[in-house]
Length: 289
Image 1 (cartoon, one colour):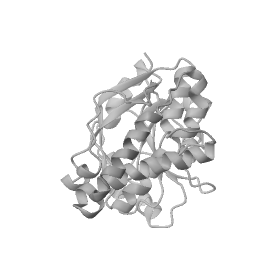
Image 2: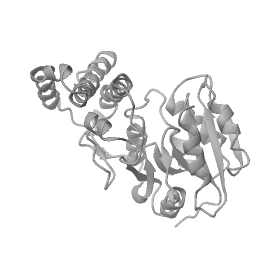
Image 3: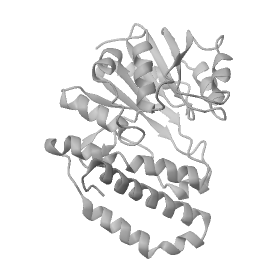
Image 4: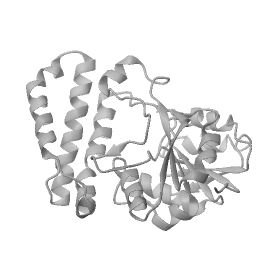
């Protein structure tokens, strides 16, 4: 059982002006009493995000702004943050969500029983019913399993020992969808362990427009085919029958596009995700629909 000597909280930021103050305010209210520092990673902001971050200099412990300007990529920002960290344990959260008061305390308490630990999300606090109709999620009660293969920890609510984060690194070929999946699967292939931390809760913020939702889910679908190419020899299955079922569902329910916003948003989300799979299959030169 290890206990971190210093914890580094890493917040990758790309044009998060509307939400960043809420997240930093929540971080300033953490109950964790051990030593920790805060890294805000600027991934190429063109708005007031860094001005907002600097305004919290007196309210967050050892706040530093680190630049990752050479490439706009979530995984690049994570790697830059991991390299710049002074702590021996890293805690990651996203700029557009809101951590609960004991979030960091819960991750650190669990850090001694696994190499990578992940919390859960409150999907109701920040999202009105319309957005739940667009993406009918269920609250996490255990680590999710991706593609019926191996579990993973969501990168927007996780803790990892610094030594491991630097050793493995987040593969910058992957971004958004599959980025944390690839990282956690590679860790497990090297016999590293994962743990679920139900008390480490973050309030998740959904996309506020159908256009933004579609972009997000396209980006979720696109990395799956290259993920399959990388892990198929290790047992990752390919299930194109499910994809065919979904394309038939989209065709038979195309009328949703002229109905309520709830049905239209849900249809577009599914279509964007499936389109991402096709785009990723073309790029990876494989068929993983």
